[in-house]
Length: 281
Length: 278
Image (cartoon, rainbow over the protein chains, first blue to last red):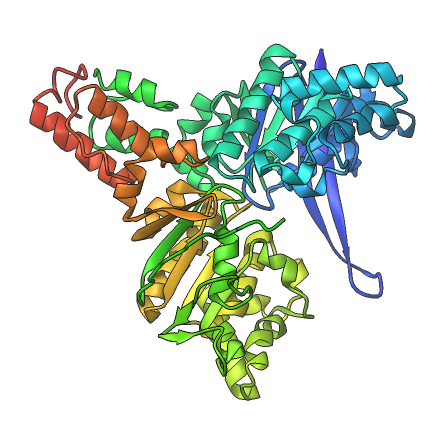
């Protein structure tokens, strides 16, 4: 069954001037129909302003469709009755780690979500423990969040979402503000959640090398899904991606350049290992 | 308890260099750059700008801030005027220039970052993310700085947006001879543009060298939360497999040429990869 499904989804922003008169309408999401299966690892790419974050915000009912429908685990997000249930099933992590952590101590921050859900105290602590272990932050449970690095803070934010026992987690550019090791930590945590806990992951990013392990990639442009496929299929279209203001990982780019220079290499090489093998070394 | 955010930093930055400043979160990069334009005062030690102690008596700090322009992270959060043009005028106006000069500079700066006339009289808040970032950078350029410091200017931008902004900065530096210090978490960006990399770790300068020499020490970089560009890893992997390529290479184009050259030299371009070049 689909954990996330959108049908003919349209979202329009209404721009108003200072007096509140309508100046114009921007269609940020334009007729998107897609379906994500439970347990999939999905990546969404797209340039700034392509509509990817607007689409993502529909998944936990921060935004509602102007037209069309979004279902999360079978529940229509326009149905107010299901709002809290939807937000518990589909959690969200944003770009800036400093805007998401509210607790004075790591474990209190992670416990905040389940506490709000009315989970019994004993179970809250169990959930805090398992969530922090899942992202590799258990040893920091007594720390003050402001003593943590960016990557560690993002992992605490992710733990806070997992403690609500979601089926799906949406990560909206979780690594944009992080250093290289922070980026690695966060991506590794997301992959582990997907592999081990079988949580559906939807990762939005501008870093192409972060999505090579995704099951499927959607590329957004002008509010529509412009491309869809496996990372290998998507990254086989170097010029098309560039025309959409995107890029490919350096190893894919290098392989593409070598192929253009006459070497018989396959399209869509994703790792150094694959390149080494394709070169017959 | 006192905590040293910077310890024993000795650096000389000559005119016109393009410097990459890298280091994990909390390594001291931002603290260092805030000393360079006098926003922070050293607890110990001295900073000289063109030979003059910037914290010495009679040194004009206001003038320094015009000469050493600092573009903060997410500078678009600091846009506040009613339209883009007025916002860009703010810096030079504060330098006490006359109105005509202020407007000429604002116009030139907006052109330099590639913002078209049609955006000049729009509210900065109606621009896209990349355009806002440019408008904010123009606000600093309008002060005609001799040194431009950019703290993660491309965070959150799409790949094309990253390239456009950095290409423009690089072009501007060629044109004006300005010194540029780029603080970045993207090793690929740093490798592509700079001629010198300063690596910060635990409040100290850990490395200070040209990019090839810094990325050669990728294992040490990894130990301090950094990395080399993906190309560096590819070149090392190929070398380990016996292909005679230069491992100091940091760009895709150089890597392509080196691999083609090495394969040809080995005479295996035909048999080794199972097919003739087309």
